[in-house]
Length: 391
Image (cartoon, rainbow, N blue to C red; front, top):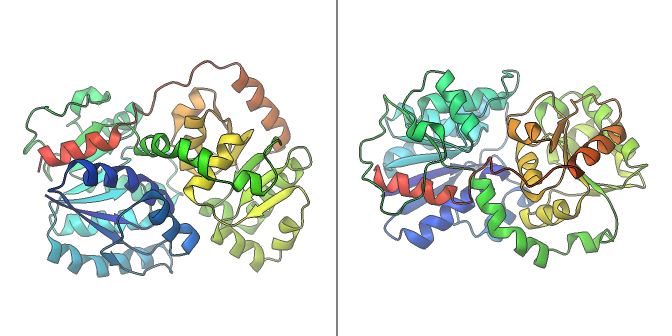
């Protein structure tokens, strides 16, 4: 069996790690072809993840990392099409909701190759988000939609996808399960709740991160309560008024609790363009760091008092680690984190992050064990098994 895996951005490298490990450890007759679109090309956003997480080196690197959404998507499709034609994989596997995801899904579908979407069925119900368009279209051209939660399968059912395994509940993992050949095809896509591959990865690397990363110690935060904050989504970075507002609120919060802030290249670019970068960098209580490796980010998060973010992935990782989260967006795809009381949506124009911090801390301290919304840490095992048995 041959699987072409198309990835291009930091969250996809993390998700791909879990599936790649299962293939290399348990399926020696499966050929995995990694195709890197180049969407994230900076060493801190790309190379370091391949090295730290043990992802196989890409067979192809398309080197496409600049341009507006349509331009980026079109250029990826143009370069990807002859590769997929030549490789003729059994499956084309895509992750998440980036322009790389959409470009690969459309290219494969036009070639009548079977698309696998990992992290399918998520919805913010906000079509002003480019990610929402990407994920909706990808779900509807995919042959296999692997969902991370039961709510994600419900979203797809509501959109007319009726071929749903196990009524949307987490499918059992059974190495000797029935032959699945032909169960999914282009005309009747199959929806399966396998759990969340990011939970798999966190379970694989959490202890390693805590043992090996020295990031917290290097910044003299070992015995300090601190927040960690990230801002990268287009809705918050492309509008300098919104971005300045958020960074000002984070600076105000830092007067009460130190803030570690890994700065995305796009965020830094916009701040510099509008002469706002020095205001943030010169704050005595904000620790500005470059984009972090996965291990360093997990280490920082595991010791933080709160995570402040517009990242979907960090919302989940905070949930997995038992760390309260403030989400600086108007909505989230990860509604389970909110309904459980572990994530508070404060919007991208929060009045006062310090009061929100006190609210989430007080509520979080009263909660019991973390619910198992995201599976049991064997999502990747299920994914590869199903691909193998339905090829």
